[in-house]
Length: 208
Image (cartoon, rainbow, N blue to C red):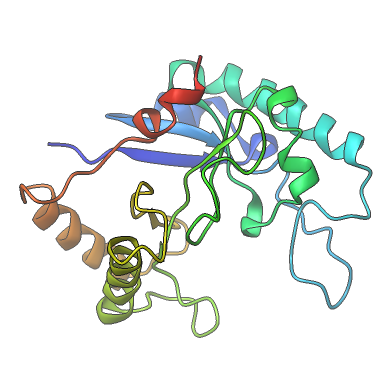
């Protein structure tokens, strides 16, 4: 059994060769537009900030969606994954007008529908130690993130209907990170208690 993958791609950096190399159950999501940090000094990184007019930001997203959808073809999914996991609520409300029906960020979602016509399904486990050496966080830390979200769902502290998502960064992974992923996927895909669900299935309700 293959494990489905959702690949977040930056529209302006995308090249046709990338999509020709994809195999298996891979969906393509929109990862911002140019992934350029527009935050002011002292602010947390974000491609989309209050300094950019809402109409301009929405127009950039729509143009990026058009380009990426054409390149990705049948692998395309109308889901937006903002760089640095930050997107103003007012801009999230503009996603349907840009042709996007899904949103994926990091951490337990506050609600399934952050805006009319938008379904949110997040990731909850990050394998990279961004505040340290930017390498693999280690198996105990990665598994603790997963267990914490699963426990929160079971105890009603997080949305029970949101699956636990794993966030990977293929250009950032070191050998230890890849080894952990290999072991994790080999063990879980053969476990009858674990089910890996594709992004296309999770966001199917918003595809029509």
